[in-house]
Amino acid sequence: GAVVSQHPSRVICKSGTSVKIECRSLDFQATTMFWYRQFPKKSLMLMATSNEGSKATYEQGVEKDKFLINHASLTLSTLTVTSAHPEDSSFYICSSPRGNTIYFGEGSWLTVV
Amino acid sequence: AQKITQTQPGMFVQEKEAVTLDCTYDTSDQSYGLFWYKQPSSGEMIFLIYQGSYDEQNATEGRYSLNFQKARKSANLVISASQLGDSAMYFCAMREPNSGNTPLVFGKGTRLSVIA
Image (cartoon, rainbow over all chains, first blue to last red; front, top):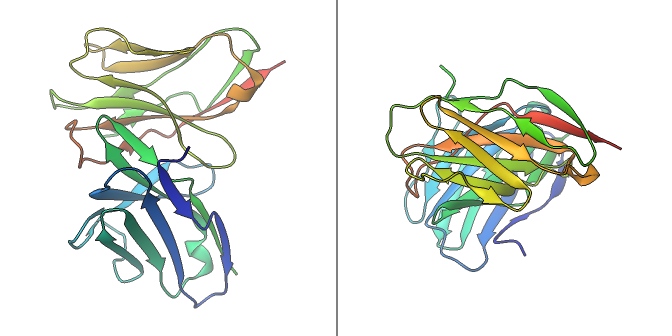
């Protein structure tokens, strides 16, 4: 079964609204969560790294005010896309390390109309 | 310079045959980890196999094996006895240094199509 659970799997929102994506670790404490974005037929690009109880570290070019990441507990990290625009439409996926393995959530398809 | 290079955008293989997906990497770290993931059209990332830089033996997991050539900095994935369900995108990724809080860096991926 899933070790990292991500939802929603698909979401459609109107331009200008905000959308929250959640990632939960199911049977381990996820002190670190990585958030990736993937455009169609492209690779995964790291957006930010969140650590429980501290501010997220964003990659260069990623707007921290637009992509709000919260990691308030050891089992939950959230990504909020604020004031979404059609160009934010993408596949977003989280992952968390556990030993030598990195587990991924199921991913979220975001469509902004 | 790209950290992970996958030179094959697409590959075709006949069912039941073996196929090799290429991956080369660039690092100056002594400690690093190499990963392969399968991504079907649903989007989920399915972990296939892991090779640590200090591992002397090539990693194997069922039909998957990793041909690790450290001096050449290559970590090719070999899939034996291909099945139709193997059709997907395959990503090679690296973590350097090989510690828990280091994110994966991905190659551009190879789309594998298995033909009946």
